Amino acid sequence: MNIMLNRRQRAAVQLMKNDLRFIYTITKNSAEMQSNYIVSSFPYIGLIIDGVEDWIKAYSNSEKVNYELPMFTENERLYYESMRSSIKMWDNTYDTIYKKLEQLYIESDLHFSGVCKPIAKSLHLYDIFGVDIVDGLYCGNTILNSLYVPQFRFSKIDTNKKLAKACSIIGGKYISLFAATKSYTLKKGMHFAMADFGGLIKSPVGNAFSDKFVLFSLLCQINFILKCVDKYIAEETTTKLRFSYLLYYYVLRILPAVNQKMSLKLHMNNQWYNNNFRNAMAHYKLGVALREEEIVNTDPLYGLTQKFFDCDYITIKRAVLYELDSFSKQLSKYLRIRSN
Image (cartoon, rainbow, N blue to C red; front, top):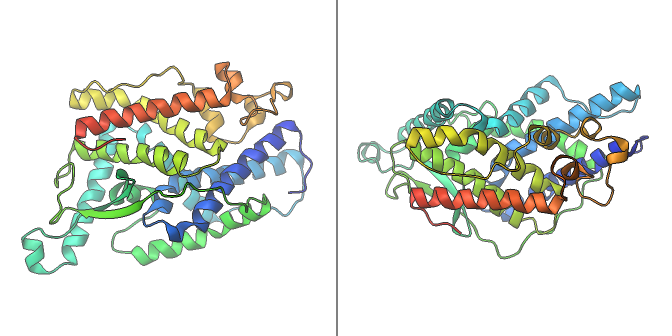
């Protein structure tokens, strides 16, 4: 990417390159994953690609340059904005989340009951949803993933795939533009598997939709970050803190409503809750968060954690992951599901 950059812009470009390497890594190794890993990553892929395009547009406008940089078509813009917005799922009201998941659960039930034999339907022997299991932990489910796919319809699986393939082209352009074509090292020996629930094999939270399924979906999303991002990507990368912090931030926001709805006492330490840091994690605009003299070239996030928390990157990352892991264990205990 041969353009003139100041210190903050160079730092932002490196963070974008880190994240684009994540996309390159998971797509390159997707054949080895017996799971819906890519779909579980959709909110984060949307966050990355939409953020990169937004940064390039802002740079081009501010610097008045005429570089031939790839920009969204209208369809791509709508697609990636939808993907990106799904990362804010847990920032809705609890009732909104419940209704969204319930509607997709009902649609899944109707779809799979409609494609099975009449006797299987009458005896309710068909499956309603699938799960991703990584090293024995639930790290995704097809109902939750349906929320991540723009314009998703259970009856139009092929259409969903064609649209995703068409809109993925610009992601490849950015990966090439930022020379992010070096795969991260992946942890060997992790076991990816899938299972279906609802028919002969009952769901761990019951075959009828309930509040427990909502919490199960939250558990899946947390475990995905802990297991499939932090552990699966063997090398350290700022992408890990970026994803985990956003989830930590939104879980804290929905937590009071969860406890009130189900008369629970689930808890997380809100010491690291900071809206300005969240904005920095959701965008690549270091120029808004940091002054030139505040850039710390030796720190992975270039001084962002020092600015907002007065401590280094690894301290914040460990603290956030600890809170997510602790919360995962609380959810598992309540749902009577095996945890780490």
